[in-house]
Amino acid sequence: MVSKIQAAAVAAALAVIVFAGWTAMHSTTGVASAALVLPPDPDPLAIETDGGKVEFTIEIADDETERSRGLMFRRDLPADRGMLFVFEDTSRRGFWMKNTPLPLDLLFVAENGRVVAIRQGVPFSEEIIAPIYPVRFVLELHEGTARKNGIRIGSRMRHPVIDVISGVR
Image (cartoon, rainbow, N blue to C red; front, side, top):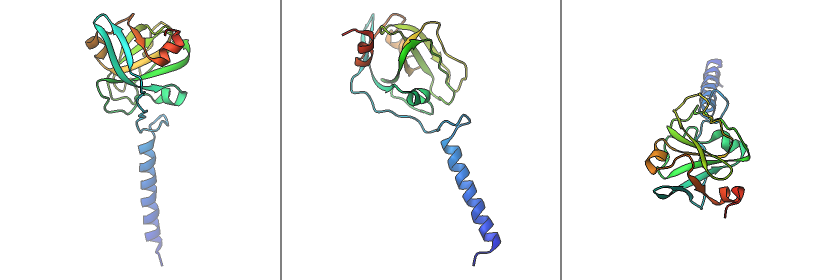
């Protein structure tokens, strides 16, 4: 027979385990804290620069759930990798870095595939990162990648998803 003290101890231990599991899966905003890792797209994303073409392996975030999670909670990202956010329409977009430990370059891209703004994302910042220009895509890369590779405003991105939307073949 189990005593009341033993039953209370078991109940308390279960409550601690359940609470620890819940806090490991949720942030203060109710977003699961596990990193979202999407499969790499089979087609590389190419960016045309004055120095030539630069290619990246990308993950594509093209639905609301994927776009809202992005690179949150990711502690590493290979230097030649990025995440492309694809939106249903062209509009002004704002991003923040809450729950994102990686410093990032955010490349804001118009519907025609041209970079219209490049902004830096500071880890864990809640400051909104938003250019004045409407965009259809946003590419997140490691901080400094744009400068290192000669990517600038006006650089053209090529990828099947972008080319279909922009009408470029």
